Image (cartoon, rainbow, N blue to C red; front, side, top):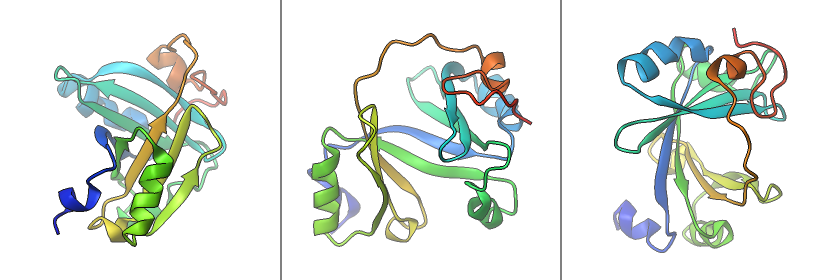
Length: 170
């Protein structure tokens, strides 16, 4: 059975690729300036210890750039694997029913981790890289979101983005 047959029924749609590095600033010359990504916004996840921003390209595809917040160990094992350089961290797919997706994957014997159904605006689970040929796959069900002003890129990098911690990016 190929992967398309195994995942049939999840109603998954590819949303973005996430790239992590010690500094988002080091990723911008390539992904924004050279490749033409338009800044969409971003913010901090202070609970897990990382900052993100998303870029959209002419065809509608997106890349999420990620960096650890000061003092965070969130990316330590990932950076160990990449010799400190970073790289593609995960692929994100949106699903219409995260609980049905989790049930289907568990029913097929896949190992899952990071299940979070508590946050209505973003419910997620991860498919272990050992189950996906070395790739971390995130399945997420986006929920209702209040309209918020998009911080400027300068404000985001200064730690004043959505849920910003006030500590500037390195």
